[in-house]
Length: 208
Image 1 (cartoon, helix red, strand yellow):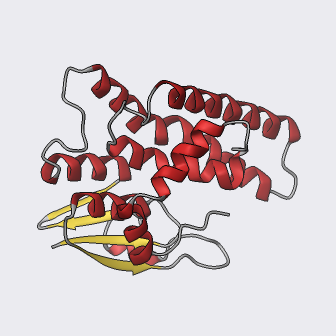
Image 2 (cartoon, helix red, strand yellow):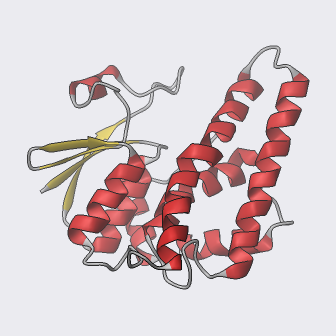
């Protein structure tokens, strides 16, 4: 059975969600963040050298990085249900959003989190970060004007991957009522039975 090394309030919620969508049995190995530092416990390094979550174990395979894990799970267990067919326009969009989530969206959101926690954050830098986040949110809002889901008219693993930056944006990145399509997409994702099942098993995702 697949084991998910799951850290509370982390990207590993996406892995639980994907497994629920797949209907694939899994076991949760739970970890809690340090309440003072909000870092993962050192015990995660016994599973993977990076000491971060998510990490899955599937037989002899130990795999980290949420995007890689999602692609692996969808490819091995999805039977084409959660990945657009290769060579289609939808597949190109799928690839884009799978990489955009962590390559473009999350670095700025993490940087903003660090800056707002700093004792003397340089305001010009924070302003620049906020402006870039706003540009990215406009870009995501426009994507929702063109299709129901990020890769097209069909739900895919790209929607699971994009959930974390959108949730982080709603919590601390400036996602507001001026982007109603993105809010509507997020509300629809939260109503998916698999999302709710993942939350029930892994805990509510509470981002600061």
